[in-house]
Amino acid sequence: MDLLPFFEWAETSMLGGIGKTYGGVYAIGQSLHLLSLALLGGTVLLTDLRLMNLLLRDVPSEVVADNAHKWFKVALTVVICTGIFMAAAVATRMYYNPFYWAKMSALLAGIVFVFAIKRPLLKRPHDSIHPVVLKSMALASIIIWFSVAATGRWIGFS
Amino acid sequence: MLNQLLFDFAQWVDSFELSTRLHESYYMYNWVESTHVLALMVSLGMLFVIDLRMLGWALSGVPASRIAARLNLPMMIGFTIMIVTGLLLFFAVPVRTTQSIWFRIKFLLLIAAAVNAWLFHKRMNESVSSWDREPVAPKRLRLGAGLSLGLWAGIVTTGRLIAYDWYDCYRVHSDLIAWAAGCMVE
Image 1 (cartoon, helix red, strand yellow):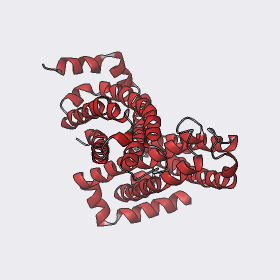
Image 2 (image 1 turned 120 degrees about the horizontal axis):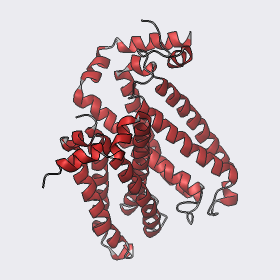
Image 3 (image 1 turned 135 degrees about the vertical axis):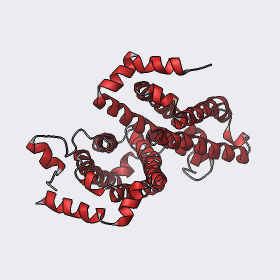
Image 4 (image 1 turned 30 degrees about the horizontal axis):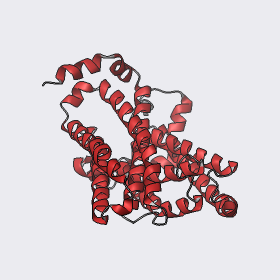
């Protein structure tokens, strides 16, 4: 299925038009994207470093994971909303940008990983999960979310 | 006077061959910039968690001093990487950056954030024993945490705006903006 017509439509949509016309609004969208990415990174690191026993060892990992997940969802929502806004303004260029597709793949992998694997597993008492499983999952999570950020930054360079 | 000094300094930095090489190296420059952003996820991410705890919006059942103490190390590692990569980014493009109004505002906000962080830690250490297990920090500290979030939002925004040329010196501006940006006749 060729998605090019959708990307061309996105660029001519009202959202794309706002981003194209008002540079200041676009820049604020970029800043919000970065700030929410920082919050997302903080919640991911908080949970994963705790699961790896490297941080907050004297706080139950269930408490850390549950608290962090609430803010992770907030951050992810803002990242996606601002990301759509930013991409809409330059949608056709994004379509031909390999780093855009790399980021979308990493983001999709991250979302599936969190909501289909990590959260269902972490809803169980953590001491019933083998430590190797917990630590491997935490490491995979850090790699996935930092790949999302890195590929996102490289969109602007290509 | 100050603008002239800053301009001379920027030109001196610009005279280093390494500065030009870094600027012109596609991979090196972009990796430095990417690392700057990735470090933001570590440093600001940890700072946000600490501030949210002080405001009572996250981990309110965990003693505040414990959160601040444990997250301090990863936060400082992140800030160190951010400072090093930030200096490298300045080193690569010194003249334009020195004459960027956004960079100048960012720098002032960074100083304000540092002072706020110092005051926050001082006040927290003085009083933490009386409220450590409370879900919300006292008003003065909540104010400090809110200010920290606001200042860092400003730092990230102005940092992002450096890339835009709306107020670059080659454009015609009012005398006030030209002075604030440090525009000099070369």
